Amino acid sequence: MGAEVLVHQDGGVGRIVLDRPRALNSLTHGMITAVHAALEEWAADDTVRAVVLTGAGERGLCAGADIRAIHEDAKAGGAGSRAFFRDEYRLNALIARYPKPYLAVMDGITMGGGVGLSAHGAVRIVTERSTVAMPETRIGLVPDVGGSRLLAHAPGGLGTHLGLTSASMGPGDALLCGFADHFVHSARIPALLADLTARLAGPATGAAAAVTAAVTAHAEAAPPAALAAQRAWIDACYGADTAEEIVARLLDTGLPEAKEAAEQVLGNSPTAVKVTLAALRRARTLPSLEAVLDQEYRISCAALAGHDLVEGIRAQVVDKDRNPRWSPAGLAGVSEAEVARHFAPRGDDELGLA
Image (cartoon, rainbow, N blue to C red):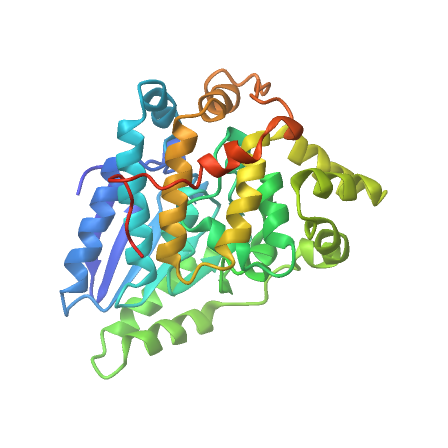
């Protein structure tokens, strides 16, 4: 399957290990293809009763897509990135509808594309080291890989807060916001996986029951959710109809944490912020993950043709000057027509999952 993804079978468990630890296991197109191929093969293999996804190294499951590659490709027209998004989103849909238990260990950094490979699975585990985020507005993109659906269905205004600010979640917040199911201490992960393999060796035990029993045996109470205590101002501020009004409400609270959130929103791509707000509001009404992925494909392709994605990656990852020159430079300069452009049908180039 290639050196960047390690695939093997351990008894009744199909193991997928993302293996680019020096790059925080960031995803290449080849990795997407390899994971998809393994899942398709195991779906038809009765000897594989459950699948486990982990990341090599101790720093994280996956930091997202290889955005340096997207940066270079976007400057050349974006054809390669469109193909990457198409295959990535199809993989996200496969994971969500996978016919066998799919367990993802979101240990360490799990962002962007890493969320797409984990948070749509049947069983999502976080640890004390987990940092989970959809930080796309920071680089001029919009939450994708089904992340806009997860954010849209988070309690109250939490998803909008996370999407517009690009803020990260610890394990407690990931559980609160619906990105994870269980907390297991990182030191107990090897024992959990060994326990699962042993349980699945017995043919009398159903796979789903074996996974539940193994996880239950090793899970424990998660740390408190930091966002829980901030629901009052988050819900009130992010319930506004426009990004400009959200920022105004945040500043009017007089709360230091709300002021910090406003500054984070204003520091991100104004176009991405406004498109993200529209995408989350639309995602609430879409009937399925597949429909949301179709919408996200349109948005991501439109972003590839814009200014801010290339500039955001340059500032955050390539030159690392942390001083992106957004165009338009502020929220007021982003027109309704520009937002609408990101949702426009693409003719023959639709994802077409729904």
